[in-house]
Image 1: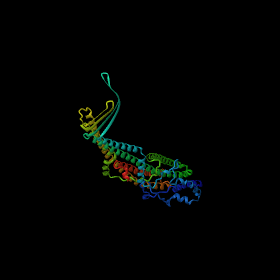
Image 2: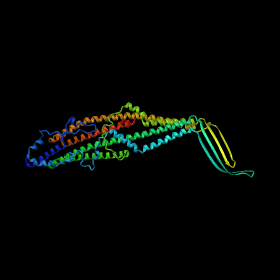
Image 3: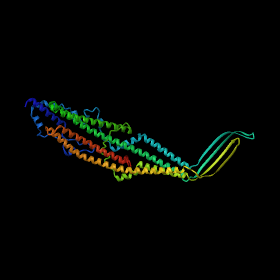
Image 4: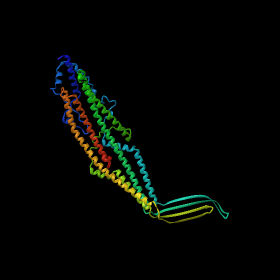
Length: 498
């Protein structure tokens, strides 16, 4: 064997040693068990077998002294810095860290901040105050009312061309009316207003619940993209380390350039996935700032905050107490009370009235009258249609309420199945992850031992492993999103967090 051939072959083997140093093998089995947040436990380095021909042959030959220097060309920042950004990324990854805060307390704090900032809730509070004022207006219909009318006139009186009086005249008219009997019209109008005020209050609660669900959903998405970003960062760093090692091999063996190109392509794909995830994360944070303000706290780890499926029987009972269902019930009751007030308005009514008049100036006089007046409707052509319309609206409101309850029940069953499927998928992915970690460790070891597996097998195993980690995170957070929606259909997601 010529010295030139030996030096080239030694450089190739030294490149493999550089890869072995940069990409430690993981122990198979339980050593790579997945945590609940989708990240795996750190892999422990495994020493190369003593029988590995690449290591043994290079160690025995003195001609590889220049190769040791070549092996030091591998940039340590692309293999050993866990916090380093992917080499092709133009952005910082400082925002990918999570805090140690209690996730439930942070979600409740974000919900409170969203309620304080919401202009929609402010409008609902004003509408509720307006409904309360209308209640007081309806109650006042049973109280006495009085009106005073003043007039100043110029008068002239003549008889057969002879002027009798001429001058100014002032007049005051006083009217006092006290309802004695109205067949319950004022009472039903008051009930109508009370039901509308209750509907306004429940509408505010419904808006608060929708805002809380939106806030929790965005916070969960933010936590999801943070974990996925960490996974893609590790994957890109692994591919960058592999590219660095293959560049050393390719300098000595141009026939392996295709492997370098393949590794570079995998690195670019990992960088692209990282950038896309980072963009989605930034967009999610922008939407969160719109709800809770610009001072967005560092995200807590929320991978297991809502992973427990709620009891279906309890949720079905809570549907009747949900703000939107209770609002529909109040609106139906309001329409029934209004229909009854319309019916009462078509019946006789009795009022106590006092009328007085005083005239000053020309024709000074004073007169008054008091007594009981009875109003009996005899002919009202449109009254029947008014009553019929009010009754139909009441029936329609009741049907809408029943439809909302039925739709929620079936939607609840559907979401419960979806949450159970996502949770089962997360458990299955954990088992697949363990096997995937064993496969990638074995594949890398066989490739390092001079050709038992190809580089394409190594990259495929790495891509499958990190892809399954992303799938695990997605399954966990899909479950939590559905569970949050299930809670919002009953007592509310805030109640479940408390």
